[in-house]
Length: 67
Image 1 (tube, rainbow, N blue to C red):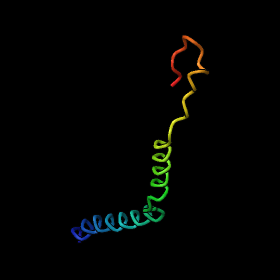
Image 2: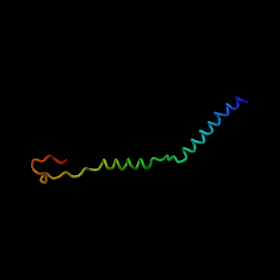
Image 3: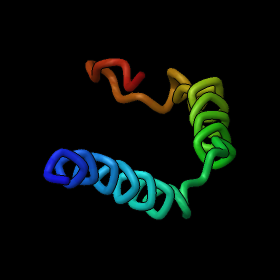
Image 4: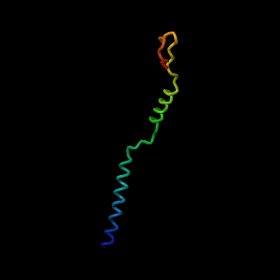
């Protein structure tokens, strides 16, 4: 009878672990939609042309190039 009690402990522990894992995963979202959209916005921002450079006539003499 004592051996059955010792066997019951790991079986109950396994059941508790299975219940806990199913409870812990209940709200898990598996979509990467938001992450991919953010990456697409990042790439679009990095591919944009930079601001147009200031014409040479607007830069005072002796000043370094603003770009």
